[in-house]
Image (cartoon, rainbow, N blue to C red; front, side, top):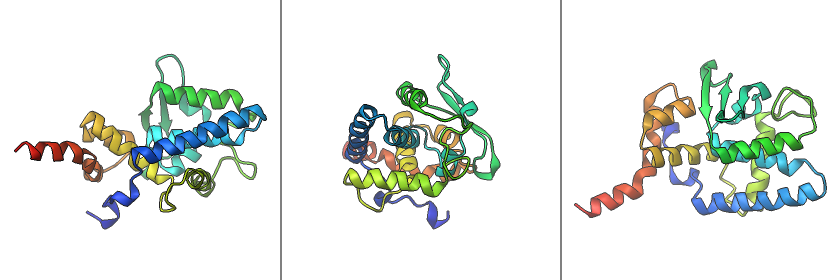
Length: 198
């Protein structure tokens, strides 16, 4: 396996760090709404989407409104431009659905893209990365984290809850099953408990 697929703990946000990030954003959204500002509402949706779907940064940028199913019982989106240009469906939670809907209700744009840009059709990976870095810094998170850390967090949490590597592979769009196995360290707590009982 290529060394770039070795997931070390320094790339993985802890539960407390994710809580801090969410708390900072939630406070900013409340203030933004009171002043009729859209920025923090959009930024919150971007980061929650990353945390709640594990999408790659480029996939977030290229999402269109038509790719998202918010109908009753829908709770899913279509990634049309995934790695290797493969199409996949990604399910998400009801709480993320509410955040997306809140952003759409607040959004002031006729763009077909979920996250439009002033300079071009949709936000670039660099622009989305800047959004994450800005809020991560305000939340006191280490500078080493990137928006891709949300993908790692999502994958590890999904594996911890489901214990199903195939599900992780499907949701993240990994072409190779082996790639998903790097997230198996998410079960380290359960493993530690198990070996103590031996």
